[in-house]
Length: 536
Image 1 (cartoon, one colour):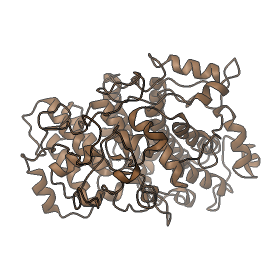
Image 2 (image 1 turned 90 degrees about the vertical axis):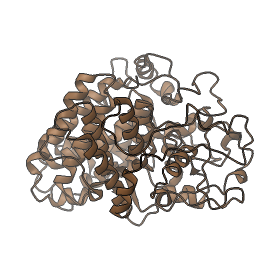
Image 3 (image 1 turned 90 degrees about the horizontal axis):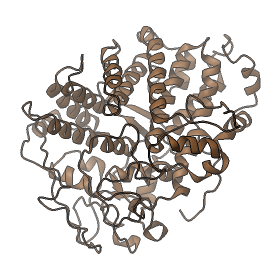
Image 4 (image 1 turned 180 degrees about the vertical axis):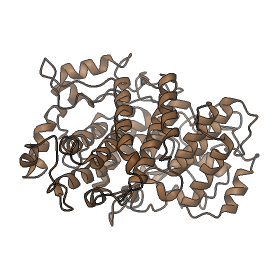
């Protein structure tokens, strides 16, 4: 973390770089950019397979682990309330207390477009050109992957290069889609992919599709389920910004005959083979991440049986044997103060980006909003909890007991090693301490139902902090704890939390006109306090 990573590549040069870095055969394939020959589609069709695999591995970069740390861990994983580092990076003035570190945060953008470690847009753009006519199944996979990867980037920055990728503006720069434009294009791309996969869902996939698939071993049916679930996720994401569009897209996802993700076998998780999950390295080998205070309060309060599946009890003498998290934005004088608080439990070599439980909770929210084909809210909610319990090998009886609990609530947070004034102010009656219980009650008002749904969805999505942070911004749930020390210089409110990340300064240097036009779509200054389009 003491290194200075200065090599972010300009998005404006992504096309040139990918042409020189993918394979020597790129030009021969690119001579026929709108179709694929029979030879192209042989099982050893390495270019497309390799590019699709590269894109899957770049949505959440897993190797080297320091890229994961910058791309997501010291951002979404922390802002979500899941985690907090014991390490006082940069003299304890960093993302965790809203002194946003551009040299860290640029890795979200560079990983999406082109860096030595990862790329999403460049390989997927190439795959789309090659497969659009001759290999619709691969074309559909590319579309779905592009939406999954790039909605995460948009949910961090707002405007992104998407529909205008590789298209020069009149002034020679490169333009961004506003976030609203990006989301409209996400839905367009998902609809195209779903239209292709729906009639294929009962068919055996091509060898090329199977070889390229790091998630479902070539199942068209499961890719269709994921595409529908992703469409429903994004529909609910924009429900406050464009209610009519949200309902239209959400109901289309619910009505599709392919259905949504249903059980743990349907989880959208990238298989990274024998490679260690990067969070195991960051937490276990480097001791750079620990349990967050909000997840301690919520899961310990609920006596949640998943807690030991997520974290390891603390070794620190002051809290030994407890599940103890660290609160965001506190004064950390030395790493040794909190290093022995709860580390993460060991994760398998799967990068979980959407569990089936999330799809059930999406369906629950759609039901309480009255969307067609959403089913019964109570049934959906309970099936979501059960899917999560099953994922972690917990007995059905424990889920039944958990779902019947109408008493347990999140508990106050106390840090016996606190040195920051106000650090232990999460007590009974605090506005930041949730009082929501577990058991479903059809008689509750809409907002209480929503808090219950999102709180359980948040628990089930762990450790996927980027999506959890996005849902917190959209709904305000679950209730999290504000930072104690705010080093933003007034740009970010402690009580409304961080809303986004500013565009990397390098973009203003290499693509000034494009970056300026992108920033103008924000409706506010390009800083962490300005809300995204869907964040109302």
